[in-house]
Length: 450
Image (cartoon, rainbow, N blue to C red; front, side, top):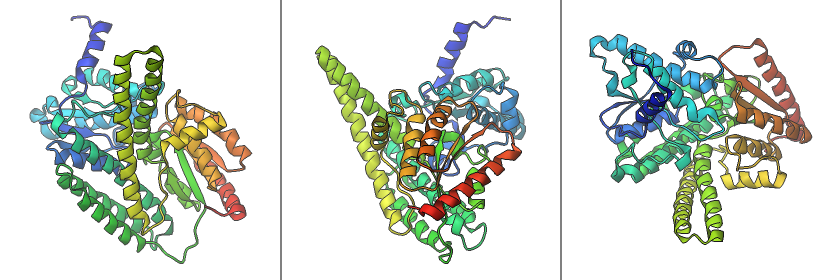
């Protein structure tokens, strides 16, 4: 048997993980939150790609089987999702199962977060299973603000990017609509049923209108959904303590990975607002603006005009992209907030100003810590009754957040709790959340809410 060298492994990862044209493939998207992944699949279908969201958490045991437990928890969950899907497809199709017809979507980010290594590990594990070495992994990177070039034909890039960003904002809106309505619903289960129907409608609308750029139909339907959602609220119920959630984007967003922490908080009397997915997308664009600005200044000092031109163009490009994103986000939130008081999203530049003012962390370090720390401080100063930091066990950026944020919350006298997850069920976790909610209720009685 021919020996596989380390060089061969690097070559295989380079060849089978990248920005591949997804046309003609069954494109498999992992679920992160209950909404955005499904809307994104709808967009891909609008552009002629057979995209679907995989069942999630069903293959957790498979994910654990091929990992050591030292990996970041989302890596294990998403690995389990693709392995479970492939196992079921092989059972369903038998001899007609052709792995090369599938492509798996796993984006990445730069270090020091381990997210950048998920698709590399997944590639090695897929290659160890007969036949699955033919399943390519399509990726996007935060290094270029998730540029779609190579995944989608060049002439469709702008249209896809616009639809993709809108789907992120709409997904965040559906999330926040659910959290605003469910604690005050007239009958248990009304909000969950309503929001699932809304997600399916929006996914269908994105699949119809994304490629032709007719976003007015999507926005019109969002307006109808929000109007209908108001009817679920029992107006006789008093407002509850307001809890903000920060942390690692996957686990705080993926309901099964965090064992439905938001519902547990609601059970003990909370109204919860989680950090958005749009926050991360805006951050990756903002960071490209920040890096281009730094490079532009350095090359101006050196009088390297060719490099000055290069970074000036990058600075202008990402600034315009960020402006468009903020404009779209503001537009959708404005439509929704005419009918219901969901929380607006913040600008990333404001978060960096908070860090500079408090000298607690730096955008130069990167990772979600530079979002979670100033967000937690902002929530506390705005009068939120408590802050929860949700993250994977052993997550380095989130543990940084915990070590810096906890004493700051103590000084501000705002209840705070760190909640980590690794797939295990801990009997003391709910008791800890219940104790936290007791403290939040006391804060609410004393200070009210924003």
